[in-house]
Length: 74
Image 1 (cartoon, one colour):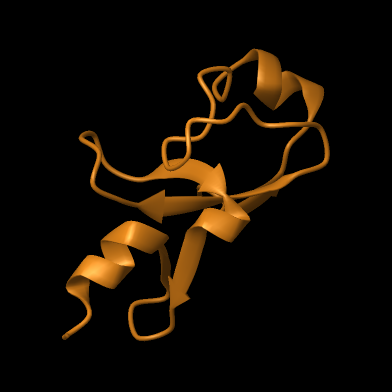
Image 2: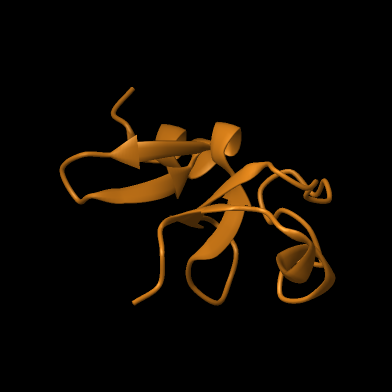
């Protein structure tokens, strides 16, 4: 099972998350919290900085903030 929330460690920085955050483009730092979120990018959910995401209680998943805002009624 894939975890929805992780703490960034050296293994993750140098491995699967080396490209950085899909939401803001910044690199991850040691000790930061990342969440598995859906967003406007291709390829399904990705880990992004927790402050770039919104937890949607109805579906029990994280959404990228801009994606969440675009889905809300105006």
